[in-house]
Image (cartoon, rainbow, N blue to C red; front, side, top):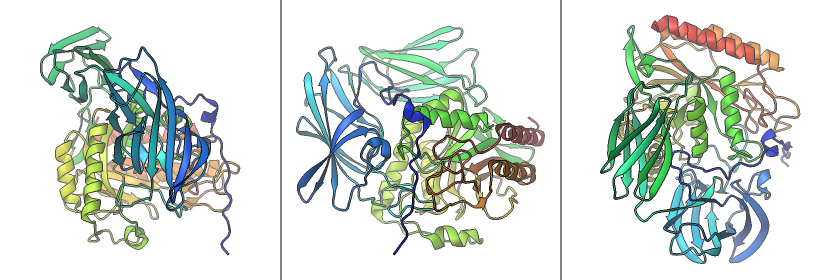
Length: 573
């Protein structure tokens, strides 16, 4: 008989804060006509044509999470049915009404007042339906029928029904915000913002009249009007965005009766040769991307923190430790996360969410002992279509965020296929970012960077192929803190330390003896594993409940300064 794993219920400080999920969920495309549908919904389970009520669930927390109020996964053959009644006030402008979902895992069918509104497949991207004809002034009913079979042809991340080690509790259902908004008859459908160092190109699709933008600056407002979709506007005395100075320009865009609020930043990211080596450059200068792996898991809501303050705490705390970059690891967050990174100055290296079955021998064991080329996965036509469509939508979804500077297509071979072709297609879709085709190993011919993972041996790297050298994962040092760990019996990490003091000393030695010297060989980005503990994994700089910072903040800032000084000396900036 297998031994039952004992786990600890961990409470985060954000549970004591008002959930905050009523905040407008899309800061870069904001309208005033907004009704939040987060909060209490009725949840039932449907199996064999029999519906059984489960009680109230708090949206947007997945039902597997404790703070959802449900704390159960769907069983085989079950569907979840969410129901929410709400009042549409008489002063709500019912021109065109859209019902928005941030993300639902994995298959959703939506009904408004008993009639179908539409369906959506895939668990990580937003979707919406026009419900103008179905919605009424007064009381309305929304129903969402959800099926989650953890279909691995779809992108699924680190979710596993056999959670443990580096695999985590799967989630299902609604896990991001739900809201309504209304627009005028001819409204702006989409907004694309492309910056340079001294101008912004605004592509606003939709509307029918002259568009006018009012950009707010420290020297007064810039007003520009144009007909059509696209305009390029020069910004006098431009202020550039960086982690050290995350300057945002806020603006209002109007077209007839439609008005939206948004923001942009002036920044560029590209690759240039300096002193005989290739570097990733921010705003035209070589920049060291001092980062952490960020998996976006929380002890209270699993995929969703108790409030958006959970995202903000992670970002600010990692900045206080001297880091300027987070590698968002095979998960796509709500827009609020990227907005906070934009606003507070945290660069994001964004992973595509992996699909396909994981194979320990092929994807981990053989590469760890050095076999890192020539192995490929089979991908069915269906899986190829679903992965590539999700990747394309991810790029379009995150395009306007200045914090997003770098994309990873495949990580450590998981689900990898046709990496060169997909690299070319993604690079053509967004040439303004850096593209890492194969992070870790199984590199093919085409990529913007040389991307390496090192965990079980000393970091000894040398730049090759005239590409920037990126250590996209390393470290994984474990320190388990009593009463702040999820699994009371087991522990997962790559090297264990008995105390926070020992962990700090170990990290200091690792950076000073291995990472900082690697800047002599062209290293320009390094991603330490990781921001926080995640379930069995205890290799975070903070505990899973975010109650304990396991490293000395002063020492970590000192490491950061030494790293940047070494990089400046090498590049001459």
